[in-house]
Length: 220
Ligand code: HEC
Ligand code: HEC
Image (cartoon, rainbow, N blue to C red; front, side):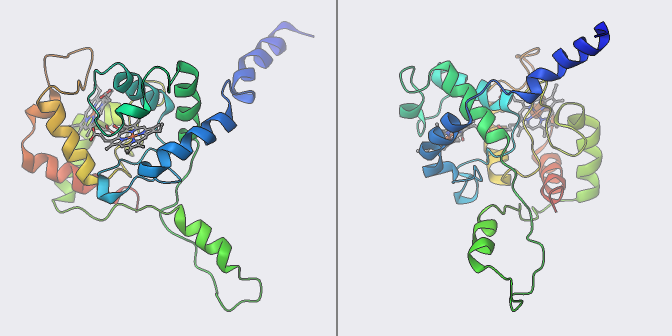
């Protein structure tokens, strides 16, 4: 067999056989679901953030920060000590959550059609999540977002898997605001390459309001 062919086979191998235990991830998620929802959709208008579809490297990093008591999280403290959350579990739950896809709307159906399955429809509706339109100037928000945030969080707000950057589109606006405060107070570190300069302190609340308004419509 010619060598390039073997090399190609080797390079696609990791994507074909993910090094994570799906069932273990699913089992751990039963604990998380109590707060973050069965499908990682979060709840209570952002008291519990959405986790579904987030880059797994970002989720894993946050779980390590919680476990090492670097990022405070009273609600989660008992679920993430060393005994409860060995590294492999962090890997498995993060990969499990990353692959959950939430829909923003249900396709229209004819409920009177003979094949209509009400139970199936109910199950599908549980995987729905759409961020309500937040107040603010969409045009200004789009401009600032594209100039100042998109290079890391992605043009469509979906984050960056390689660089462990979270998605901001599809996340509760309340939750984003709470994190802005944490970054400004240096309770969380936004950019590890520049821990002293908090980027979000350079923006006024009005500017962030506009950015979050723009983000809130990206999942429409
Ligand atoms: C008792 C409720 C509770 C349970 C159970 C719980 N969490 Fe959380 N989690 C929270 C709260 C509250 C926050 C938000 C903390 C904050 O505002 O900084 C959070 C935040 C997070 C974040 C940060 C997300 C982000 O975008 O910044 C991750 C990741 C996370 N949880 C993962 C998990 C996983 C995985 C489990 C299951 C092992 C779990 N949580 C179980 C309450 C809970
Ligand atoms: C240099 C890259 C970079 C830029 C530019 C950037 N971010 Fe981030 N952002 C990150 C990273 C990395 C994280 C995760 C950091 C951590 O571990 O807490 C993050 C996290 C966040 C979070 C927390 C989300 C969550 O789920 O916990 C918010 C909110 C946020 N960024 C808003 C913004 C906004 C608004 C802008 C533009 C004004 C912006 N960021 C620009 C890299 C960046």
